[in-house]
Length: 113
Image 1 (cartoon, rainbow, N blue to C red):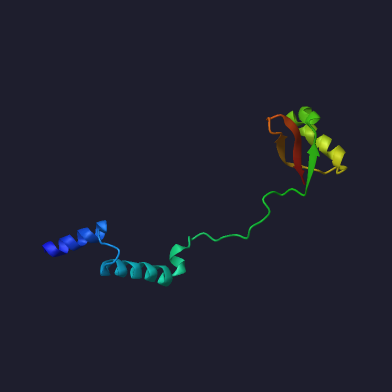
Image 2 (cartoon, rainbow, N blue to C red):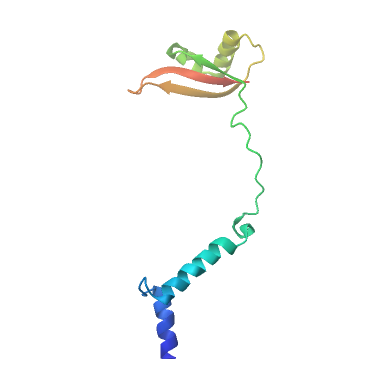
């Protein structure tokens, strides 16, 4: 009984040296686990959808820093973008602010569809 308890304690805390047979058995068990474990054990139940484009933008319009007045009002910005792009049905998908290294706004990128 004492031998079994000592073996379990040594195995759990792994106090065996690297050149012992116990070390070799552990290495073999690790390799068996790596190569013989079924892949479906590690797959989640979620189905992965094909990767789609991140945004629905068709094109991007770049505006200078003078467009700050338009950025505050989305409807006004959308009208300005429609004028610049010559697309009367343009919709804004996303507006990104572009800054220089000092943090000053140097322009805007507007994704439209």
